[in-house]
Length: 298
Image (cartoon, rainbow, N blue to C red):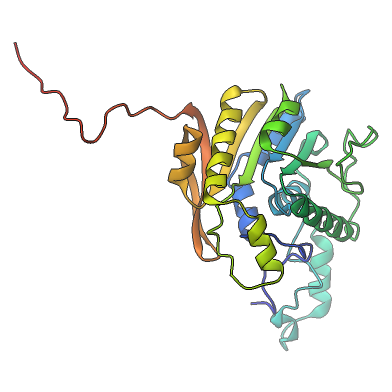
């Protein structure tokens, strides 16, 4: 056990509506073939872009970066473990163990790029703050491999000082997708839930976040837009994973076929991590009220 909550990495001070815990975000990333895709990219001429089209405050992107870098999130001054006070604990041996734990970045790290986009300027400002905190924590660790694109000119939304290029863009998924033509792209995102996502009616910051959160109808339109983007195949999709509170709604409005990879409780809501199979949803043209035609012999 530890003093304080273990999911608190120390970088996320700015949170949005219906936040996803860092540990749960990491579980979602680990449930995807991200590391396998990076290993494949190492032996090819291709990059791998990880895009979160509903990035919010950037939790999924930061956890993906941490996993690719091989960081050790539990090694932090923010965590005071009770066993440190045990009479049998040796502080010298513990510190020696920590020195031996060195990060092991994933292969293909130089080909890795991160892209986050959102329609909320406020959410992107929060993401920028979290990214800067994440960068300061990384600065205390061993030096990381230099990305191949490190000496290229940064784009307007790119956050400096991080070992993996990460770009934050304001705009709808449809707008951002126009810039991804032909690029090998994986999507991992926490899709909008609608305004029902556990916000309180009390005033202050939470109330303002509730006002910015999409309505149920707005969430449905976001799903439909995502479905259109994926069917258009502008990018070279290398895997699409969506965390959804209402999987049936996502399936219906995207008109795509999804499989469930993971299910867990996020706050007060059950959510599922869905993977797009690459297929459109089969159309059920038969109404439940329409009787099946009888089979006749002869």
